[in-house]
Image 1 (cartoon, rainbow, N blue to C red):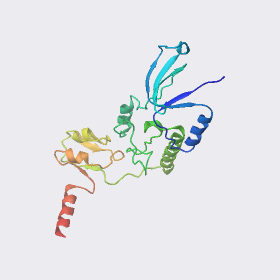
Image 2 (cartoon, rainbow, N blue to C red):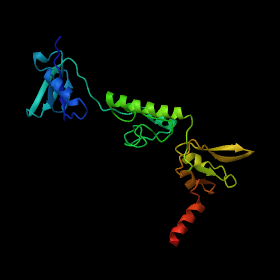
Image 3 (cartoon, rainbow, N blue to C red):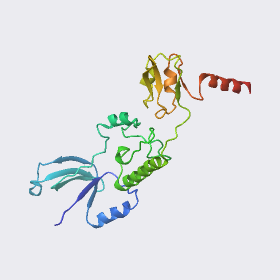
Image 4 (tube, rainbow, N blue to C red):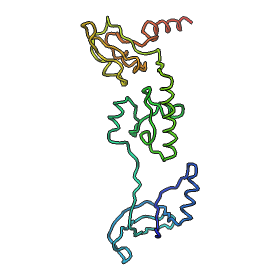
Length: 237
């Protein structure tokens, strides 16, 4: 069975490994490439040939005119968008998102599959549009990262995390509201309500220490006294 294929495109960029060879192969197999933007798809026939078919009206910039292509099937190539529940997933696992809505990696070059949350890795089109080879490669990297964490048997956390002075804490909950990593929690302890920090979740960003109205929250090794001491030492030089 013979099928005639038309491909309307604006620009053709064969950037990946084997892409240029694939482009040349489909050209040799008879795919018709028309450089131009599709203006309309209609079923209004003007000739006998167009009756009962879909007519793709497009500009052919190489020929410098409008062409009508009658076809049996039209396949659109829309842009990829994040899933509608991406925001809920991001909040559940504390994953940052880019302006386009896709999940954000920790570092685009140095750590492309890790996220801001330890032990949570991303792969595939949740991070952005990808083809199959890139998705498989990233999935292998994410699996290797996960196995390396499991094989160690323990997770080493950063020493510069938030800490609470329970004497000053008034359990206002400001730290709990501001934290993107859900590390501080207001709990009941010995009959009193105080804030408590989950060391495994805290990233030491210091946002909680900034909003704390009583100064009960601070970051280890970066307390106000230590910072003031460093400033005074610098001024003495």
